Image (cartoon, rainbow, N blue to C red):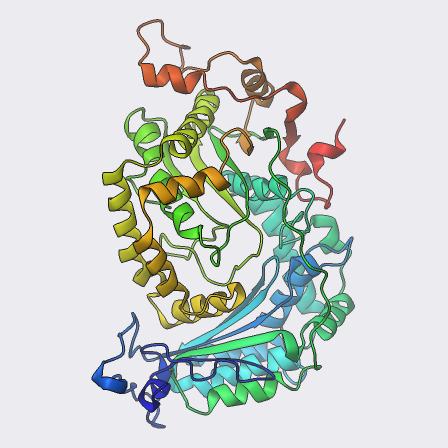
Length: 535
């Protein structure tokens, strides 16, 4: 690696070892001047006269710091589900040993700094951002929270109340579309260590205390399971300061039992979440033994993007359900667990998982058409598996994804987050590798991968809707469920297009015992799935 490339780098490392410090990633680099507000110099030519590729955000006068610990919801103690998320929120949004929460916030506000943190299933991520001239002040606040958190009782109550409200009020009561997606996670991973959401359970949060969070931090936040990165126009001494400070945490890494693969989906099952709602929200999916480091990930990415790229108006499902039939607003499909990066159509970094699932999101649908929409999505998935993607559409979708990869890291922080996720998956230069696999993909190799990993007869689904018993009868009856007229008068008596007939009669393979009705208020109370706990 040339000296020029080392200077044109974002810094990644671990607390105990400079594993990737100075990794040659284009554009994000230490500030070349100690003068406040000085923008970084242009990238210097690499060895051989080639100029490093300028990434999105190069020269942005900001600094982004990410610190990742290998600790998450899978480490929650039994009966205290959500403790990892509570601890992360309390560290990111609480006080330190020497200063209270409000004093630290008063230090962040004048410099335009933000600090946030969250726990996912296997990792906990902290992100700090500010204008570059305030990098030192930003890190001083982040350091005090990470290395000497306070765990004040008042901070704990504030954070816990917000977390309980997010589960019991916002998710259960005010966000049907996300509710369907989150309950689908629980259904797919019901017998796995992902069996509760990272946010926890209402009772698990109620059973947790500031002492529990303090103990969890002390036992789990270790020098040996910490990684970090710095991006943007940062002071050249900052990476070493972070490494030295994280090294003051207890040495080593806590033991964690290996995660076993998720069980195959098995026979189809549906959970109907019953609540007053003018429309139905649908999520369906199944576990897949594919993540970003797997050779078949590119194939699944193209196929699911072709079915329905997140918040875009051209996917196969979008054309069939919205454009051709006017049934709903959006129809999207995902090759992996997806958390939206705010303000974009792309996934947010910082949520890597070793166990993944493919899914389809249908939002929102008139309750009378929920069964038809579910059947149509399964029929189109089965068609993709059986017939593949038409070559012209395959080429267009593959090229779209290759052109989109740069947009996955539009800012220094997104760039940094992607690189840290690559660490998790063991795929350095992950986007370059993905682009190479996309370039090598053919319609034939794509279809072969779909046959290996996807099944349209082995799936799980969640529908959030009112009149749950009526929908249940529709799903288990085996009778066709044609599109209901817009006036609600019931199925039409005229000619029904052949495609509609195929969708309406698609075999679901459901029986009464495989369709569960659960009131929304029963969700997220404990780690026991309420559809199993009820008679």
